[in-house]
Image (cartoon, rainbow, N blue to C red; front, side):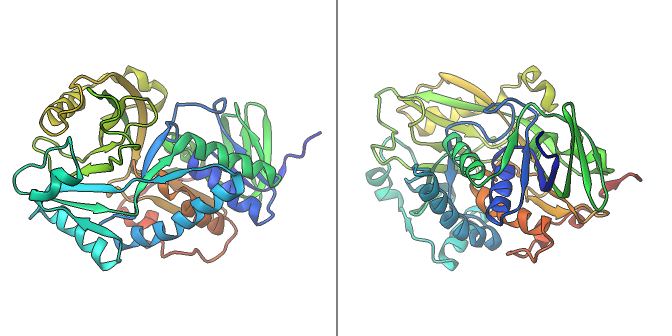
Length: 387
C-alpha cells in the first residue's frame, strides 16, 4: 500500500506548484503534488503554448528575481533535454513622456539590461509591418523572448517524478487540518505532511477558506486571441518579429501584448492584459468581448498585416491582487502552511524562482529574496476567521 505520509504536500500542479515540488524533491524531501483535474488540462492559468519571458519591469525586485529565473530555466532545459525558451526580444511601446514608459526604460538602463532605443525614423526599418504612433517611444529588451509554456510544465513535472516525487491528479481537496503535521483530505483519502504549500491559482481562496483565511484576490477570465496573418510568416519568430508590450493605448486601461506567430502557423497572439470577473468553476459562462473590440481597433491601426477579426479565441484565468504583486508567504497562524497566489497574469516566467522561494518557506529556511513586497500583511485588512 502506498504511504500517505510525506515531508511536504503541494496543492495545485500549475507552474508554481510544480516548480515548488521540483525544488523540494531536489532537496531530497518526500513530496506529493496534488491536482484536482486530470493532467494535462486547460482549466487554470498555466496552459497554452507560449508566454513572454523578460527581465523588463518597473520594479527592481522583479528584475533581480528574473536574473536567477533565467538561469533556472536553462538548468531545467539541460535536465529535461528539451528547449523551453527562445530569444526573440521584447518591444516596449508607449507615450514617450508617460511615467510607465520612462520607468521601464529607467530600470532597463539601471540594471544594465541589453536594450536598443528605436527612434521614429528608424522604427519601420527594424520593426516592419507595425506602426508607431506620434509621440510614442520604442525600446527593445534584447534578452527577452518566448517561453514554451505547455512544454515547460511537462518538463518540470517529469524531472520532479524522476527525482522520486509523486503526482496525483483527480484529487480535489475537501479538507485541511492544520497542526504540527498537516492532514489534507481528498475524495480518495487523507495525506499527512510536515508542511503544506497551497498554489491553487484561481481556486486559492476556496482552499484557504479551509484554513480560515481569505485574501483579496479577484479571478478574471481572459480572452486569448489569435489573429491571422494576411501573408503567412509576416510576424513569425522565423522573421525575427519580437514580442511586444503596448502601454497607454487610447481606450485601454491595461496593456496590450503580443507574441510572434509560432504556436498556430500563420496566427499571431495579441491579447488584452485584463479580463472580466468570473467564478473559476463557471468560467465559460463569462462571454464579455469588449476587449476583443478594442484589440480589433488596435490591430487595424498598428498591425496592418493582420486580419482584424480573431481567428481563434481561447480562455485563460488571472488571479489578481490589488497591487498586481504576488503573494508568497506563510499562513498568519500556521507557519508550516505556505501560500503562493495572486500571480496577476505575469507569474509564469517566475515559476522556477517562485518554486525555490516557496520551498524555502515550507522548510523554515531563510528565503533567497526579500519577500516584503509579497507578504500578506501588506493588505490592510486580510480577512481571517477563527478555526
